[in-house]
Amino acid sequence: MRVFAASLIITVPALSSPVFQDGTALAPAGRKVVPASTMASSCLTKVSPRFPLQAQAQGAQAVVLKVMVRHTGAVNPIHIVSGNPSLEPEAMDAVRLWRYRPYEADGQPIDVVTTVRVDFIPGKQGGLVSHPAH
Image (cartoon, rainbow, N blue to C red; front, side):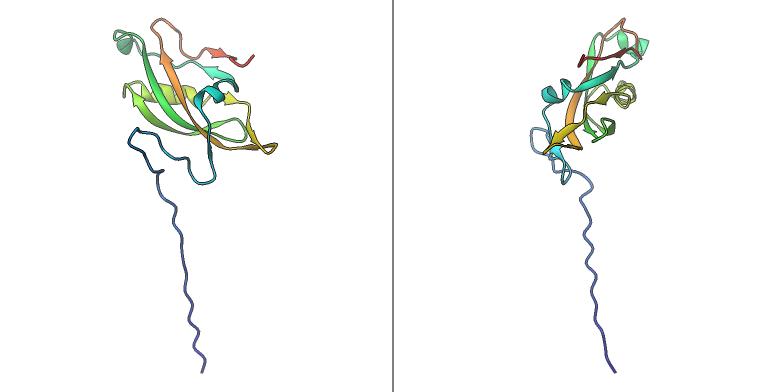
């Protein structure tokens, strides 16, 4: 009679990236972190957020998001870094519609992690589309 012993090793990825004391985080494994200033120059389409009237009374505000810009230029997923909690859903809805020129490494488009600042300006209509890289 032969007895076989087998073992199964399962590696489970961490649910979130390690966060440093200054609030910055490492990118998920295999993802490159690209500065916001670098990615801003490759933004092809930017949609303005809707600024709720009740929040406009507080004046101009901003929400900062950590996003993954996919190799296709789409933005997903999106995570909140800072800002007025009542404006976070509007900021996320707008940024989901942004499109970027794909970031390349070694001539190939790759997914990257960056931060974006979404400005809420009183009187500015939400949903406006701009093409900042043109």
